Image (cartoon, rainbow, N blue to C red):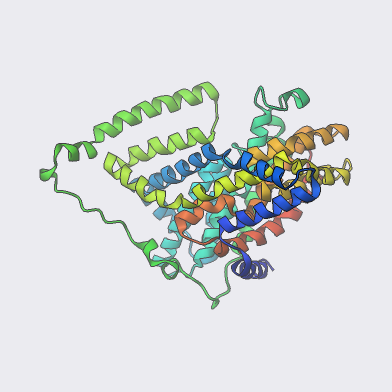
Length: 449
């Protein structure tokens, strides 16, 4: 059944799933029309809302570009590349390869979503290379999808935006709900139970997506032979080095910068505890990558190569910010959330919170952004029904993360690094998404907050 669903949705995605930028444009049109129908905003108002949000993700877009290029540089450093190549030799079959990639990315994404994002892309590519060299038939689009599927648990992990935000003094809902420690959200019986189930179920389901023997399998070599090519750099003989060459290859320069970097990293964690925000993850990637490359010029070349995958992020993030602007400033988010609140009771409220978050995430694919616009509505309803606020927070977090398997926003770095198209991977992701929804519904009904 899992394989059949994967094949069906893959065929659908190849027929109807446009380039991620066009997907963002179509969502923009849809949001505009929904705003006109369901809110008091007029045609010109919706355009104003669109532009008001359009540039609000510039800093975040830059962070995403940095995590892509520094993650690429880290993964291509000789010691890391050798480690990934060794791990990529572990699978003995295509289904085993898919299982391993999803498992590794689930763990990485649970630690930090930025880490999972880059590990998924790099490791999927390395496993595909390893299987090709060992003549194991492996469908390259499927292994790319595996690198993205594993990230679908991030919002219940240590970098979950909503649970970390409500645990922070001064957050925007502090007057309404106070400070909610992570012991009640991330380390609650509900979230621990969800993670245990997902780390077992996700890799298990994904392995059954592998095509049948004899089916059309597109290897990494058939998909794009250049993915197997190693970059060859012409090095000037050491005896011909100029002063500039010596500086470009100076290990002393790298060591001094890395020493300063590690001093700050130690200071950061000693003062803030296990605070893995996006900025510190990027900084760790940068410093560790520099250290492992060893020479300034080697790191510069790796960064230059990694920037090739940033085009989609630069183009699409402003349009998603525009969608968020229309959803937020028109009040459309509150209206959609209100529909689900209206049909909820004490037993079903966490489930409907989850479903509403699944839908809103398609339009507002940002964990922190979605909590900012949807959170106040869901909290107010939970208080009216006298229900658990921590469970409400986690139910919204699960919905936000899960429909990322349909929304290609977060797949952009992976697509850039693997050179896959969105239509190649999203069918498999959508199949897992539909299979996982009933699991979340059952867990939200049965497990305590």
